[in-house]
Image (cartoon, rainbow, N blue to C red; front, side):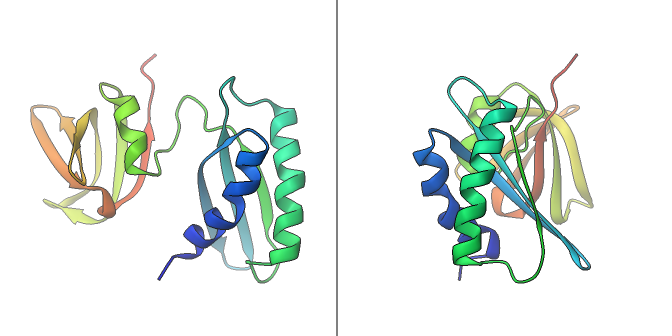
Length: 151
């Protein structure tokens, strides 16, 4: 069974692609009665504020008609930015060699947070070098992954 995020992504992706953008990922954040649907879009030439506004207008129309979220919510459309979240396994290879922060759903070897260099992908696992130790972390266990550019 598909998650709420997957259903919303499948609903909105065709509209976003028709506008010339890629749906990089989405976050569905529900905190009590306050819900946020945050979409991250990317484009060949980057993303402007006007691009975000245009996507927001079109997505709002789809959301109003299809009504996949019960109750009130706030829609946010944003560029993924340089410190982007990584949502899908196919996002990771583009950032091999970069500093990455990962948070797991459940502890692995006694910890949930990992900060280190992204070494690559092995099957369905993300390989992260933390100090002198390499960890193979199942992608399905990753709650949040974010690229952190070194300044």
